[in-house]
Amino acid sequence: MSYTSFALSSDGPIARLTLNRPDKRNTMTPAFWRELPDAVNALSDAGEIRVLILDAQGPVFTAGMDISVFSDPNALTTDTAAARQAFMDAAMSLQDAFTAFERARFPVIAAMQGPCVGGGVDMVTACDLRYATKDAWLRIEETNIGMMADVGTLQRLPRLIPSGIALELAYTGETLSPERAYALGLLNGVLPDEAALKAHVNAVAARIASRPPLTIAGIKKSHLYSRDHSVADSLEHVMTLQASIWNPHDIVEAMAARSEKRDGNFTPLAPVRRLGRDT
Image 1 (cartoon, helix red, strand yellow):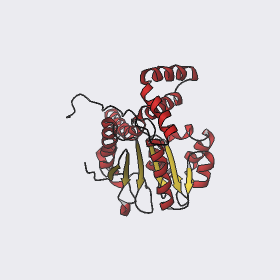
Image 2 (image 1 turned 90 degrees about the vertical axis):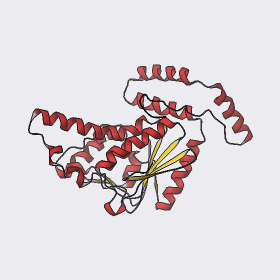
Image 3 (image 1 turned 90 degrees about the horizontal axis):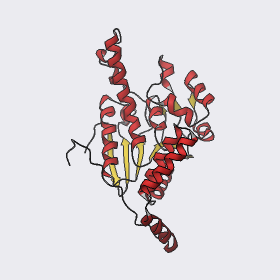
Image 4 (image 1 turned 120 degrees about the vertical axis):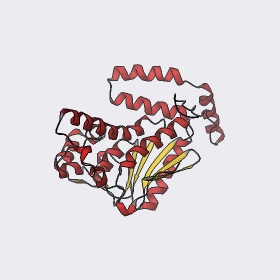
């Protein structure tokens, strides 16, 4: 499929979702919020992709929400209880767009070649791994325009870096440099330029894609569950999950592939068949 707010391509088991509106600083239009979850969910359901790379064209990774999102005055009306309820439901659909990254059965890697502002921070905090160039920086811009970040930053960022630092960034709206982001653990790596960033992220993606897909999907599910639950609950969850996806074929194949110094031939993910969807 073709999309109006980004380009989607694949190279074997690795997909790439590229923000491709550099002349508009890759801002997030109304179409973006509809298209993103549809694209990610479709990739996940098909079961063929093992890693998704999120990157962008131009000097800015993303400047966040596009001004056109605010162009419909009716969408922002909150002068009655009914209007406020509708406003909340509409805003929650924005949250769901980025939660699609977490629900996907494959890891999502953000590759930031430039500034990541506002909604961009909401987006990359929902990814599994984050890499950036030395020219990239992040900022919770919502504070600076008189509103809270409400699409995931305040919920996910304190689970990625110390809570006090996350609050400092949210309270002040100050810029987070890539060097400090790396020191805090928000970034997995900082590369000197865009070419180095692409090469490094491609290598990481290829290494992940070479692992058993069921194992990778299980690791992601277990990690997200443990983030939001107690240690005791998470231990029970991981053992239940392990029992449900235990695959002797992949274990034997992984050992043989390592011994023979070759890529493994692992069990693929099965397609997800959703009721009501054309097949």
